[in-house]
Image (cartoon, rainbow, N blue to C red; front, side):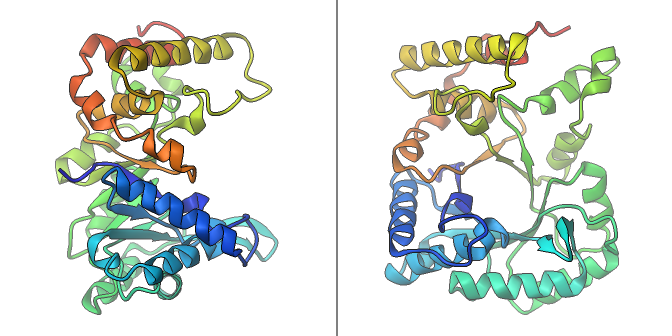
Length: 320
């Protein structure tokens, strides 16, 4: 069975802000990719901004060093964010020229002739949907991409863009995790005062289900927040810190009972949701990548009470 997990390559390629990477960076990238392959992951996620492009460049080295690997894996990347230009920290650009040049740069760095899927990284408030559609059609017609999706779009934004595309948007990548659980709250807090504080775009998962767009989750492990991989932020005090500790303890207990890892529990919780969520794991540490291997089994075995227990613990208070 093909793994639902996707390996996110944002951690590969040396330091952020540098246009170079070392031989050690290349070796570490290869180790991470091979660890992902070893647990059945065959899908790899990129973006043209990751590490300033070196994430894709170092991945291209891995492909070049292992003949036949490209034919056995699936690659997606993203365009639409521009960093540190004209005195701005970031801006979004989904103009036709930006989409085209972004894809051409990606293919050069990855040393491949096509992407299996292109994602539009962020909604651009100045984008003309018709222009976006024309750019995507040309890329599809020329065989430079095989599919198109989005990232961080609402369901309404997906629907508006879809009117200008000849193929179905195949995916939406969103931040979803046990730590960022507002995708659940957007549904259960309908007609409740607490719902006013939920930022997740209501109806987005329902839209994806209706049009059969895959839901991909970025940062699905919440930065190791519940698996002992990171220290809570310095301002994580009071009720929030207590909730994180209680959730971490519950994750550890469930992992021990099942003979698995905390990572598998956290990912399994996400994958248990009927939206069919595909986590994009971003660790560059082989040990942690391997720790994700049992997520699908956890998802299939997790009961409703167990799922709600984790959600309630992470929420820090009972659901209304």
